[in-house]
Image (cartoon, rainbow, N blue to C red; front, side, top):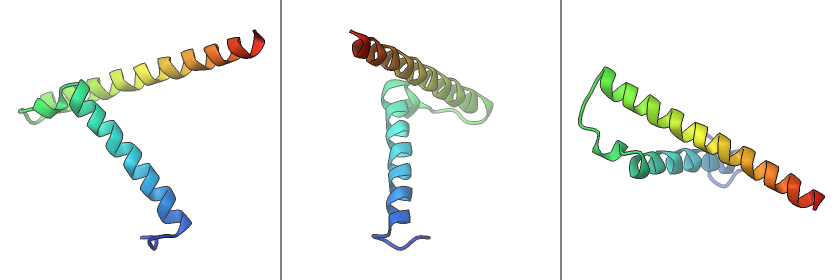
Length: 74
């Protein structure tokens, strides 16, 4: 465990907060807050939700990259 206030602690903290933001987003917008089942069904629901989240983020990043390159040309 890195000491508080060190550079490695800051990097680790930023990674953790990024993950927590993703989990909060999944709970709020993909209905993971209301999950009341266990086992395979819960795992499949979680995996499909994370797949949808990752695909939407990937598409948005790609679109933003195209828009930025278009704006640089124009």
